[in-house]
Length: 111
Length: 119
Image 1 (cartoon, rainbow over the protein chains, first blue to last red):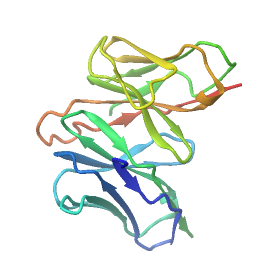
Image 2 (image 1 turned 90 degrees about the horizontal axis):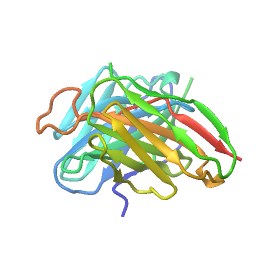
Image 3 (image 1 turned 30 degrees about the vertical axis):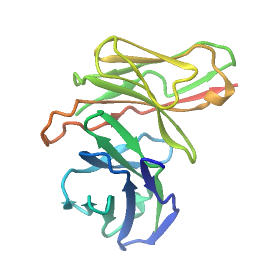
Image 4 (image 1 turned 120 degrees about the vertical axis):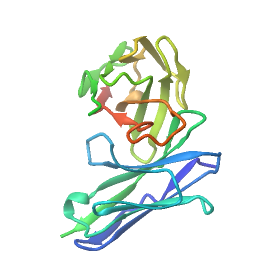
């Protein structure tokens, strides 16, 4: 069983819509969760981190964490063509100091 | 801002050559990592290091070795490059988990990547 799983997509949304990206993970105790954005040919860059159950908002981005159901999601409101990228979910099981990544979801925002 | 610098963006090597990929970070991070990224396979951890002269194998260490002689520098070595090592290599660093949700702590920051082609 993979530690972190994402739907690879591709996911297409029209400009201005809400894009919803999901990630499930194996339960191994205390965790930190991260969403990274990766443009084609570039390295991943951090968008959001979330540590506690509930929602965390930062501009057009909202991360949602539900530990009971073992999923973390990323909502992008008012999607823009510049949001077109691959989004990587990462989990850090803090006892191990390692980061585990999903394979990423490819998002295309259609003008 | 944390800066992680990888010495080469693009490299082309021949089968059997020894390859060095260098990575330097400037934020005094204890943890450093080497990943490779391939289409459909995502990011896979090759090696990581928690401290100077310390290294741990990741998920795919075969064919690779690492060196960490100084805290800020973590090198990946391909002793004898093979075509199946053609990939994007990503270096990253982080501070260790400190037991508290300190903003910016325990966040993985990546370098720009090194695209290696082995012919």
